[in-house]
Amino acid sequence: MQPTERFYEADAYRTAASSVITAVLPQADGGGLVALAGTVFYPEGGGQPADRGFLTLPDGTGLAVTGVHEKAGVIWHTVERLSPAAVPGAPVEAAIDWAWRFDKMQQHTGEHILSGTLHRLFGAENVGFHIGGEAVRMDTSVPISPAQLRQAETEANRFVWQDLPVEVSYPSRAELARMTYRSKKEIEGQVRIVAIPGADVCACCGTHVASTGQVGLIKIVSAERYKGGMRLAVLCGARALAEMQAMQARQGEIVAELSAKPAETAAAVRRVHAELTALKYTHYGLCTQLFDALAAAVRPGQDAVLIVPGLDPDGLHRLAVRLTEATDGLCAALTPTDRGCGYCLARRDGDVRPLTKALNAACQGRGGGKPGICQGSCAAAPETAAQFLHSRTQPELIKE
Image (cartoon, rainbow, N blue to C red; front, side):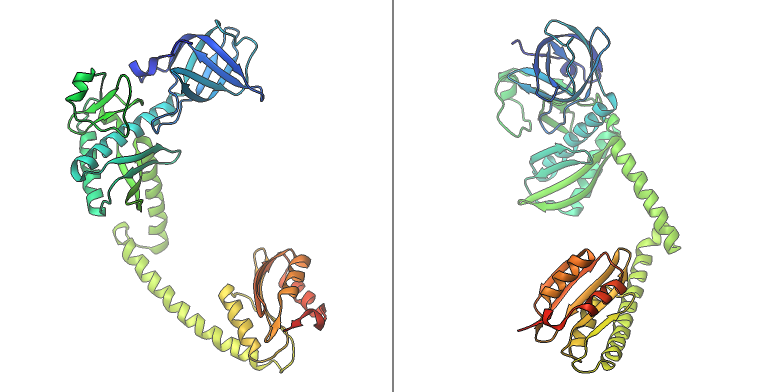
């Protein structure tokens, strides 16, 4: 088969083209792979997802393109459902989802600018790149400090503000030998160079905007150490704008909740955190007094099955342990939850695992633990769980 002509390489802004089907490979699920003489669809590769869109046949049938890949120079379009009219030699109108494509162009061009900037400033190689559904993932070869990332982000955006041309060239081998450019791997055959004056020169097969101003904004939203370097999450263009708008909305909610000015939210959060910490200490002390009083009311040898509202898992555990200090009978702490109840079963010198298993089975629960203490939750109300525990006989509480 003849290699597919790639219209997107000559013009990344071309959204539609007339072509001819050259091959069809039906699939068992009713879909298939369709090859064209020429296409505007970019195939997945180089960290950039494939285009999506439609192929329209002469009879008006539209074939939704859900994937595109290249093999041995031929670009295959994955369609959800084949039509009998989709046969070799048939004319077809191909049209891409432009919003999808332009988003990838913004992300890819922004990645070039930031990668080139990181390389120039700190010698960081881009060793991994993928345009994900939420963010662009970039992996660097060396660690980069937060201050250095802010410096690189600012400089990268200066290239955006200058609205520089994004230039594509196909240098000869001799010309290539004299060039300095970024490339993750050795490339055989013709090399396609994408250059942004002063910002980056890189071997790349993807689609890009015509000038850096169309990237709009480059924003690093997260950074973490990864395999000796950094893994960055980056947003460009419309994605960056949407994230900034979402952050502003969240900031507005925080401002309203804290009754603080936007510039004072950090101090307000620290104040609330300190107040919450103090309340936790107070709550811990009050719970200790309550647990001591409840334990004091239990007679030695008596079972203690208690329902105490408002306890968290740690509180349930503390109460059950405290009860075992007062009696060698069954000790059960229960508390209501929005899905039923939380529980903690314990027994001094005993094994409550069989009873826990029975409780889980009877009350749609989940949980477990060690012989002397088990914890979990169930779908039943605490009163129902308590009634079940009261109904069980002593042999089911196996002593060691």
